[in-house]
Length: 153
Image 1 (spheres, one colour):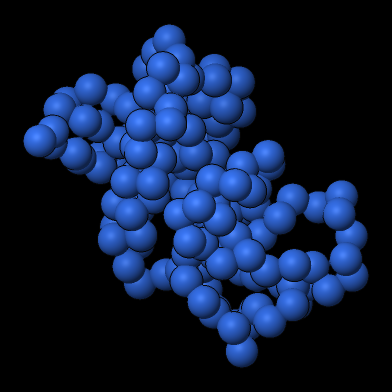
Image 2: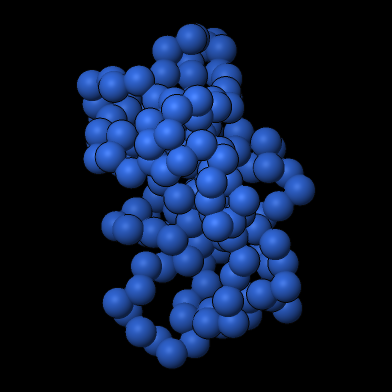
């Protein structure tokens, strides 16, 4: 049985994320868009690394997020954490690391529901039993909203 670990990384330098360049991760997500240390309109980003037996298998960037009234059944008064980016290393996908990483994130952020705006990963979020909330206006140009728990009014 492998040892799974969630590690919170700290950004130490302006415009540089704490992630190393590792083959199998999308560099554009992790190295081309970091801001200033501690500076974010929503209270800062958490850089979360997922390890299996000490080897990095996943990454996520998580931030505070306040939901809008744009979604059917969503209680917009509930404070949430948004998974801004979520990636499993390319050679380890479809081996259940994504589902396990999501469970670890839910435990780590137990005080908040987690949300994800899906970009082509609807099947993943549905497959790990996250709740889908459609937009009130039916506009399909927006990414689909998935939430780790039912926060219906």
